[in-house]
Length: 116
Image 1 (cartoon, rainbow, N blue to C red):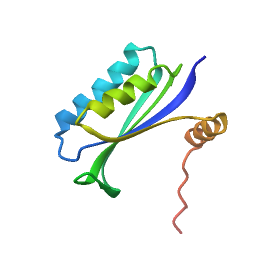
Image 2 (tube, one colour):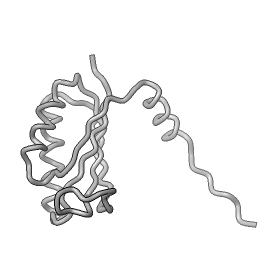
Image 3 (cartoon, rainbow, N blue to C red):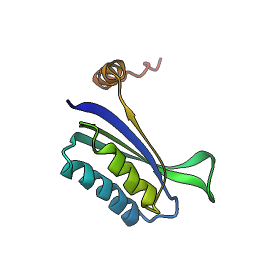
Image 4 (cartoon, rainbow, N blue to C red):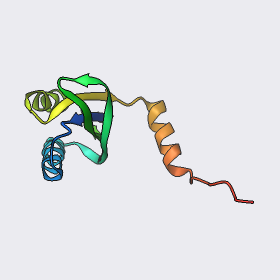
């Protein structure tokens, strides 16, 4: 049975754009090779961390949403733990209510107030 997952990870802030792209591609390719479907990747950019992680005060945030059976999560997190690029990561299984709320938010057009 396939479940929906959201993976948020933070990359080191001193990585170049090419290195960030390589890291994102590495994790994205792993998920694709192991059978994950509907893979969406959003690079949120460099942001200030809530607290220092090691010697880093900033990090590059990346969000991945995908559908999978769950067997990919532990090996993927192991890859991140052993990698020097990722400084934090968290995978959550989305509940049905959260999935419906996300779909509704994406379907509703954003309206701006009219200027008078």
